[in-house]
Length: 264
Image (cartoon, rainbow, N blue to C red; front, side, top):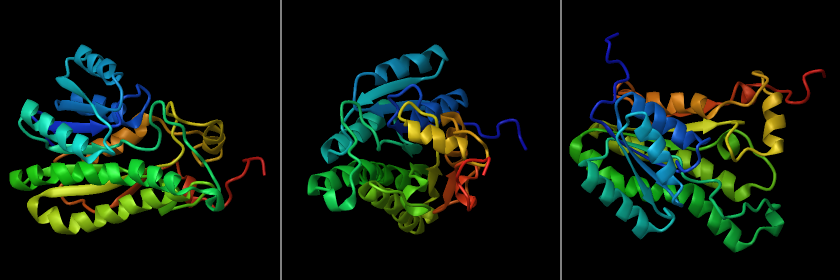
């Protein structure tokens, strides 16, 4: 092992969904930046500029971009602006999805699901991912280097839960899309993988999620940084023979048969 293991010097990393100071996106950006990367952060509101200032306070080169990435023209614009500002994009962390500021989450049984509910969740949790990859990929293929990490979920691909049919479909779809793309671009030294978090203590975690975390083998929810550690490795040059894979970060929750209170 050399001293520059996991070094991101001169790498440009675009991290989406990084507006929350407690989220996986910002945690990933901080670690990448501390390892030498230049960071482009994207979110839907101007709070992204607070995150940029926090990175700059750590002597990390960073810039923020505001966009609704469900809008393909805005996704195209963001990628073009990052390339214009930094010259390239080496790493894409596709974290945007699930919750958005000022947009309510609707958990409904499938029989009560409206068409617009389905379209919104698919757009937010799958189409955003597609939009970014579609625009970033030509730059990576041309450069013969790239790392893409898609944040999916154990919901949909590994386990199911009620009132989340559209979300589960989108997250499972992300994994399927990742595998298909991997077979096409690995020859160009572009590696693309999925990370599937379980119960994670972010700002978006519900009371149900807190209780779920207590009943994992680890006995707690994970942290955003613990997920980010996996993201950063997959974003590194060292992950040069890993592609099309799914990595579960859930404290062992999905390997256990019984998931109730530990005293039983």
